[in-house]
Image (cartoon, helix red, strand yellow):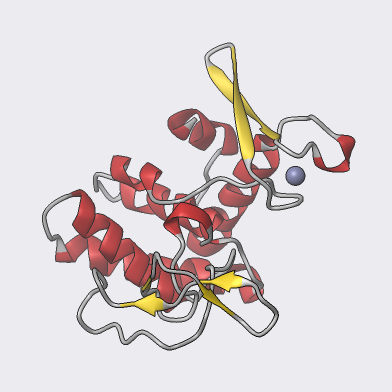
Length: 188
Ligand SMILES: [Zn+2]
C-alpha cells in the first residue's frame, strides 16, 4: 500500500518517517523493523509502498495492524494468511490492488465469525482509474466517491468499480457468492 498505511511491498516491513533521496532526487522511505513481527527482515530498498504488494507483505501488514488494534489472536492470523494467498492466486494471479485484497479478506474473515471492524482503518481508498485520492460525498444513506483530480473529466462515482472488483476477487478466490452492493453498504 501507499499513503498513510504504506509498507515495504516485498517484506511488509514498516517504512521510516525519514525521507531518503534516490539518484533522480525522488523522496522515498526505507523499510524499518520497528513494529514488524520478529521474523520480518527489512531489506534496504527505497520505497513509498506499492499499490500491489506480495502476499507475504500483506500477511505482515495484517498481523501488525491486528496487533495494533487488539490482543494477539493466532487463529485469525492463520486464517488471514491462508485467505490472502488464495486471494492473490485467484483469477490467474494477475496483479490486484492491496485494497481489493484487504476488503475481500475482511469479508472472508467476517463470515468465519471474526471481528473485522478494525480493518477499516488500515487500508486507503484510491481512484480505480488514476490512483488519486477520493473524496466522499453523502448521498441518501450512503456515500459516493469522487476522484479529487476529476481524472478523465469524469465526476462519476468510483465506488461501483471498486466494490465490483472486491466482490469479483472474493468470488474467484473462495467460489462463494457475494453482492458488491452489500459489501459497500457494510463499509461505506
Ligand atoms: Zn482518478
